[in-house]
Image (cartoon, rainbow, N blue to C red; front, top):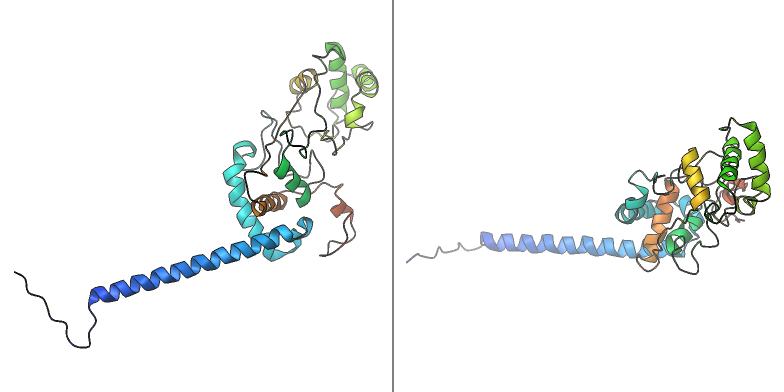
Length: 268
């Protein structure tokens, strides 16, 4: 049988020291975790109580929101918008890194509304006022007339070489085709409806003649899911702040038209 080794007086066994050290490390880890949780909760509450369009002007809140928003975007949004956030014309997913916005102006509050309620998601507050009708399938225009409208549309970004078709298409755009009703008389779109600007050569589904023909003939009915019942309010706002930080607001944004960008400035 083995013999126990006596402990010298005044000395603590090694295993007792290791146990004490493990308890200390564990306690420290719990304190760090509790501190992080408390910080996240506090900043999350500040994030949702703040004016969303003022958050980019607050370094602490913006930094926190971008950290949380980047992770949440990568987990929930990249399957459609891609890791580079530039979307996919093949799928009709818009680029989130430029200053062109289908709805509203690209402010944090604008982006947050879309993340919350989606586009044609079935919720009452989603963007669902209108969509691109199937003009060809509905026989509102003949195939030849659709090609003329396309010639006119492409001429708005200097990409049409048939002046006669452009002239015919312009008349159809402003009259029989009723295209102006959504895209406006100057073809610059109406962000309240989500009707895109046709003069900037930026296309959701592609700007080649074949893609534009399909849009006019078959219509488009793009969707974006609503996240209001899937993600927390702080996380949704953080995603909006992050997207805002990676993009630019529309030149028509009230923020860009404002003479002041100081915190507390009155916004239109």
